[in-house]
Length: 379
Image (tube, rainbow, N blue to C red; front, side, top):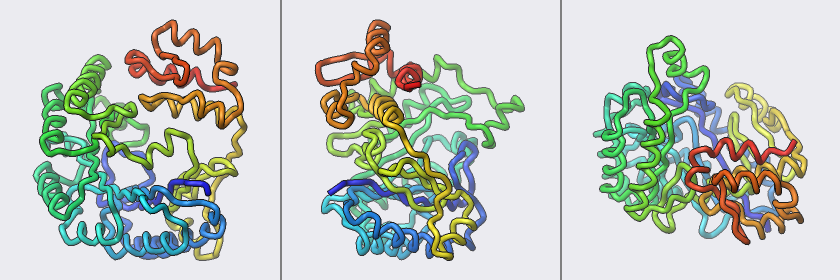
């Protein structure tokens, strides 16, 4: 029995955030119902192909999945449970935005089977939220967290962003301290990236936005690692920190380079046939499924070299690093046979540490992770 993850994409938003380059659309609420009907068809479409698979995690992302009513989430999860084999201890996450979480909706989500909430806060200061194009205030987040805890959700992640325009180290410290005081068991801390095509990127190109300097960004990142470690969070992946037992099982599938199926417009998958992605356009997605066709846009067959490269640079994102015994078991070859000179050089530069069983990033290697990852690509 092969255990896999399942990703469900809900591409609808109240408003597109100014930094967002994900496949998401605002002002398309009329398409939600036909989209959900098409999504249920796609779930059924794959049920025959996945008879030998067991779903161990479900992640409902977006967009803003918490725009959906409890009944919608129930219908999605109920169809999955009916059509697929599902692990007894399955982790089921939904991404949520403050301002969309009423207590009755949260109750319905819990009844539907959601057992992990990921809340996109991003910042504790309203002026930063406004600059990012968020639809909520910090007070709304606090009200939502009270409701979340009242309903009985205890597996909670909060997304935070640092290196925001004009953000100070003290503001970032405040955001982290607030999450610790709220006893949030998992924190994802991401540095703002100005993605081409986003509103913030346009402001940057027109000189309306000045990014923080790299040394300021690093200072915030290092503070995050040190502070959360003091508060007994496990820094288990470059951007992720969790109390013991609260690591995100779904994301560990990605970092361990294991199989997952993505459903919904623009969703990506990695299965035995390779990597593939669905059509991005909502109308095309609905039309194809209404015609009984799979909405797959492109399939990339991976070579063994591709799989080795991806296993190395994804695995190095985790603080536990790449397991040499697991690598040998999967590929029948030792990573030193492939990367010997590169690994020796990276170790000399104090970017990685190598033991009998693991290869992992050093603190310096974490700061320069992209340089290390680039060395894992096999020409």
